[in-house]
Length: 167
Image (cartoon, rainbow, N blue to C red; front, side):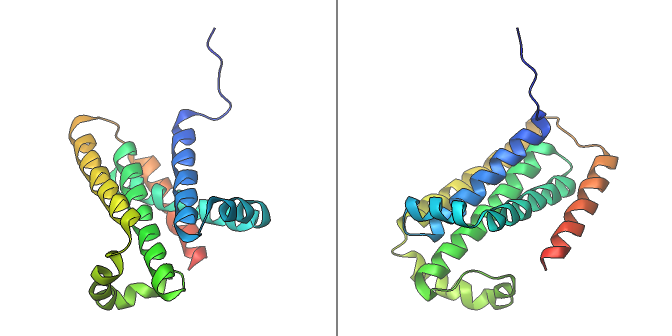
């Protein structure tokens, strides 16, 4: 007998992937897993806000691409790339990555090579990002998981409205 889940599959996977992104971001930002566990216990509101931001970015990428899994992979790739930038910046400068750091993208690119030389896990994550990009391209070509225009509009409105509250 097949049991029915409380959370539908369309919501379950993006939430699980979003939580994994937040967890990986915190693992990269903190020196050990014990600190990550303490952060989750001591700062549940920050965890929820970070999770909400990741969910909204993934919703925005689904709305832009028009396909569910391609958008999920693209949004996840973007968030993992920002997690990598955050980890490198925390390691080198002891300050986290902020949105206004994008204004200094050229300087960050110049520093990036020097900073990434001793960051082995960063290279592994970068390889994972390339793999995600190839996977998104393959899914775009092979799968037919299109999102309707009404759903895309709703996702876009929700994502832009929610992300507007963060900035």
